[in-house]
Amino acid sequence: MSVHKDVKVVTTHILSEMKLKGEKIAMLTAYDYSLARLVDQAGVDVILVGDSASNVMAGYETTLPITLDNMIYHAASVVRAVKRALVVVDLPFGTYQGNSKEALNSAIRIMKETGAHSVKLEGGAEVSESITRILSAGIPVMGHLGLTPQSIHKFGTYVVRAKNKEEAERLKNDAKLLEELGCFGIVIEKVPAKLAKEVALSVKIPVIGIGAGGGVDGQVLVLHDMLGITQEFSPRFLRRYNNLAAEIDGAVKSYINDVRTLDFPNEKEQY
Ligand code: KIV
View 1 (cartoon, rainbow, N blue to C red):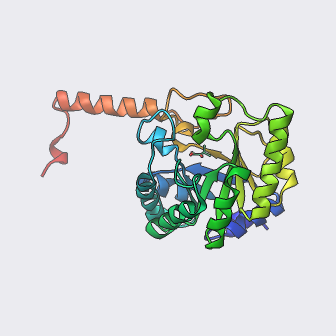
View 2 (view 1 turned 180 degrees about the vertical axis):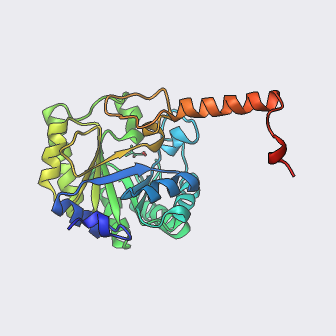
């Protein structure tokens, strides 16, 4: 029997069961009430309030500027809409790397002020203390390895990660470590498909890929990218399921035209 079809509320335990039974996990980002509601109603398993809100919602070039207060605002809006999906919230840059006490305080703020179910943070061994401390407060943690956008200035580009042996080994070790620490899942971003599959097979926790091929336990995409709202971002891994930018453009132009030609509002559209 299928795990995800019958489940009324997705928990971290449900995600492990899905992995065990070979059922793929569908995860998408959302940052606001209205779209989170649609995404949840459509049946996605996990909603990520990603710090990609920094790019998509606020128009920054990187994910670095978004603040904890910003993330809390987005996450609380999403949580108000969601009835079924597990909600994961990104800890933004600068709120968990420095010291583990600050990391715990940031995670507690997210859990208390938004009602979300878990947090995600980027990195492996270098953030293990923070992960341990957050977990010790009973807060589920998801890891994020491979391309970690909060470190963009260290790497300089958004190219595929872990293509060489040394980086691939580090990624495999980090994945094992995240599992040992007690993370309930890992996002792996933009690494070779063969490596991502190897990692997914080597750990019991679900591995969710973005630009990491089909051999992992689930997929995540940025909602605005897969809906075709964002236009300038076109990596190979992105499948666009709609072209909402064109649809919105058409609708807005029709509205402008109707206003200018006195077609809107008509008699039925007034009191
Ligand atoms: O912030 C985000 O949207 C993410 C995904 C790309 C996984 O971390």
